[in-house]
Length: 105
Length: 224
Image (cartoon, rainbow over all chains, first blue to last red; front, side, top):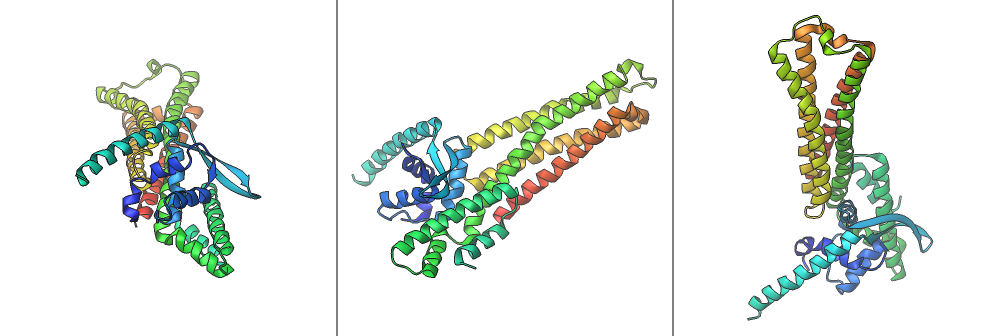
């Protein structure tokens, strides 16, 4: 999948991956690749600044934790992030219904 | 030097901004790169090849640096905005308080005050309220816009708002001091505390200009 078409959805994808769990940066990237069967192909180095931006936006909270014996920055959804994710899901369903209806007619 | 260390060194060289925040960002990047290299090693690749693959997956340093620089620029922008929001009104209130305690009421002045000077002081005092309001609006926008804009566009907007607020502050300080000097230069030296606070106010205003320039420079680094 093209990186350009992903960029606009990266925030929603990151929020979805963190839904109900706390993960560090690389685990988030692995989860993105796993859920997409490896189709999400973007420079992983662009994910970390995006996580910091989402934290500034109030959607994520982070802290340094020791995970598997190593110190790592872990992220979790805030209440505002959960609301944003729910809104993104509704919007996405509406979008795919409308576009799907036209393309598959 | 390992492939990952070389890559992080190059990323470090391309980033400008708060040293502790930069170190924090780079440490997280290092963790991610080592995690990726570990995954490749577990897949049977040699140490060197695993690190090379981890770095390739992380992305070209020029592309990755833009995102990191945007975050660094935003942090420095937010810090400058807080200095504007708190520092500017604090200087005005401190100076007025020092003037009341050490000199007294304006009615004690022996020289006449022209009408135009009243307009200048009103404008300058108005700026003391306008500047923190712009700063607060910018801080709220920065948080809110982080939800809708990418880091690069956000850093640009933040830079424009800081430049505006700093410009208004510097203009008002220069106008106030300059016009006071024209009307009656002795009014600039009402008392030692007033002089010290006036110097501090000027230094703060100049410092804010430097920080605004840095913030703008940080944006220029992103788009370069």
